[in-house]
Image 1 (cartoon, rainbow, N blue to C red):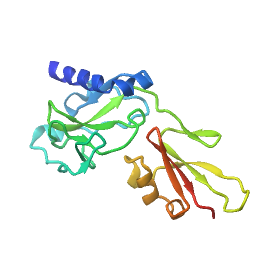
Image 2 (image 1 turned 60 degrees about the horizontal axis):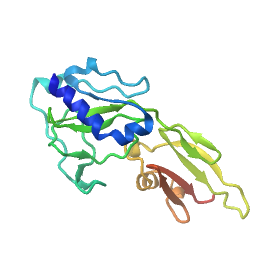
Image 3 (image 1 turned 90 degrees about the vertical axis):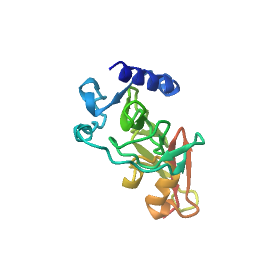
Length: 196
């Protein structure tokens, strides 16, 4: 039990910058002791790992993509599957809005990490969007016409990839073709779609 506590402390320490920004704490949801984890009210619950505890775990995806830190990352790790110490998820989400999938070096499996911080709203025109949506600006297509703004759910393929590349590849075609553009600010895309 001390090892799990030490792991939670290590995760919290490694995420100091993120936690300092939102003033929260962290905990790791593991299937063996999920009663000790109290996720935020709006958090997605961690799946039970009882089946994983009773037999061998399937191996997860191999190291594939490059992570921003320069190492390799796993594109879509599955909670409860095996991982190697040092592996990272390629997912690009706000850990204050959704639980992150991290490699628990002690257990050797992918687990959910709940950050205890406020999911920040996303600026969108003169308003804001909930932190789990992105801002889509629609050019009028008429000289002198006004741009309209809307809060949009991420396409299903981008549920854990909050990037311009994913949103433009999987969103409306008018938002990917030139003169459409996308800018990522603080890890959130704002897409400007071509006029209609």
